[in-house]
Amino acid sequence: MKEGDADEIIVEALDLKTHFSANSGLLQAIFSANKQAVRALDGVNISIRERSVTGLVGESGCGKSTFGMTLVRMHEPTSGEIKFAGKPVTHITGAELKNYRGRAQIIFQDPYSSLNPRLTVGQLVEEPLLIHKIGDDAERAEKIARALGHVRLPAQEYLHRYPSDLSGGQRQRVAIARALVMEPSFIVADEPVSMLDVSVQAGVLELLETLSRQLGLAVLYISHDIATVGYICDRVGVMYLGKVVEEGPTLSVLNEPLHPYSERLLAAIPKVDTNATRNRVEMSGEVPSPLNVPPGCRFSTRCPHATDLCRTKEPELVEVKPDHSVRCHLY
Ligand SMILES: Nc1ncnc2c1ncn2[C@@H]1O[C@H](COP(=O)(O)OP(=O)(O)O)[C@@H](O)[C@H]1O
Ligand code: SF4
Ligand SMILES: [Mg+2]
Image 1 (cartoon, rainbow, N blue to C red):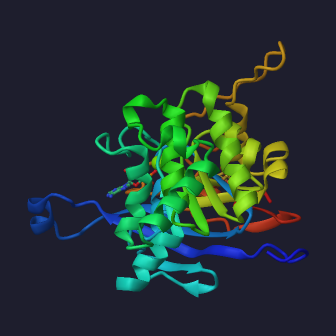
Image 2: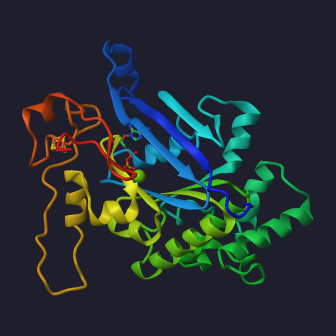
Image 3: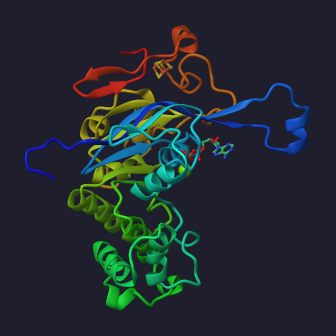
């Protein structure tokens, strides 16, 4: 990138929705007249810039993975648009889609099941290049060594090792190298440290942030744990039941949350740095099913401030502070 240029938007979601059919069973599909939709992702707008890490947080089941997988076109969106480097990729197919999948990579939570135990580290990192028919033997070897260098697993030491020789943190680094070897512009990291030992989590997160800066990558960091987004994210979106309910610069969202749901997520973080007993607010009730999204504000069934208006009219996303928006009738 030329110095002085503003970092460009790489990926954009515009009112993106992914609904699944609830009637997955064959008999149900045949006999059921009114097919219900699981509104897993229900209208999300997000812009992710190069050289930046954007966080997406929310409780389990709120649609984070569906969003990440839809962005990289592993799920077919029901409506809305995905733009990559300014061009729509929402419905591309064939060679165009294959090309996009090389440029937009995803890393999953479980480095134990995502790596084939019969392949060496070198073969694992080479696999995406072979699938995309990239380079000859020498070119691929160079790319593999570079990708392993980026994740700080020197090729001479790790190339011939098997996943079973590696710790969870090292396996997740191999998964990151498999993504990087394609020289992507965009990476979705879906709960990349949730299954790792706490002692290695910060190292892997810090690596993702460094890679984003060094390589100019746009990173979407997905987590159920709002405490971790402060480490690496420039911006954060808080997701509830398929929609982003608050979005802004990380410090602003974490220090001055606007949405009652964000307040609850933050209040639920155990405080370890003082002896003061914090008013620990437990999140009351369960996330409603995306098969049965409450009318009006989707948080109204759990919100202590809910009024009749909240139960009937869905709030719009409005900018309340500079660059910091919220979807709540209190504002
Ligand atoms: N392929 C699918 N078919 C039907 N429902 C799905 C599918 N994938 C996810 N869901 C449902 O969509 C909702 C959101 O799931 P998910 O995106 O995995 O949430 P999160 O990653 O935030 O935990 C959940 O209710 C889940 O059961
Ligand atoms: S719109 Fe109403 S129910 Fe929804 S979060 Fe705001 S106050 Fe609570
Ligand atoms: Mg998930």
